[in-house]
Length: 226
Image 1 (cartoon, rainbow, N blue to C red):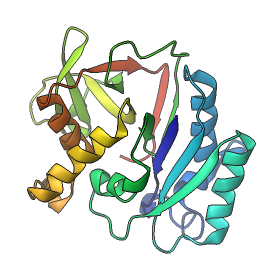
Image 2 (image 1 turned 90 degrees about the vertical axis):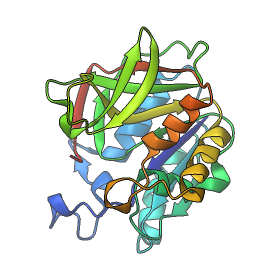
Image 3 (image 1 turned 180 degrees about the horizontal axis):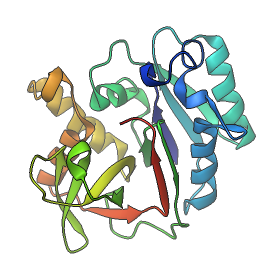
Image 4 (image 1 turned 60 degrees about the vertical axis):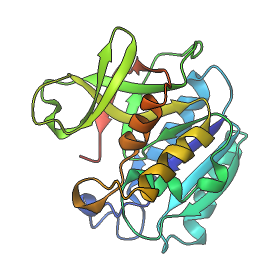
């Protein structure tokens, strides 16, 4: 299973610490955020993570790649790298790794810290979105559910439609299907606010094509990007 981690952001809110070291590689009580993410998935997923795909900014050099490769090696994973040439949103970031969008995998944003219960499997789900109950969902993307099934993703809703905030972790059974959803956005110019392309819009495309989305929870979540 692949672990796809977009981490091309500039980390402006934690400067000067992120001038040289990207925010996901900053040390948090002895480990970087990225290594904590890799640890958590290797411990809690029903199948082993075999590949790490890191989406980097153009100026991230060999030292950063070396640190990420070392993290993967410690977990028995193969490291791959892609470059997001300009910041045009989460779907644009994942699109930069298009050559790796096959098989099953997890997309996880690198600016989040979390703990989750072990997951025994994914059942019949095509995709699983991890969520956390929040009182004010207007600052987050949210999942709207009917029973166990997600029926809609809404980015930063102005009206209260769900308390289930998307925390930036998604299991995808068929990454090629996600890739096709992303290409649909670009082919049709479906950019969101600020001209950015959102991963949730690609998931909405998959929903409209009949994909079965459900949710999973986390015991703790610390959002380090909002």
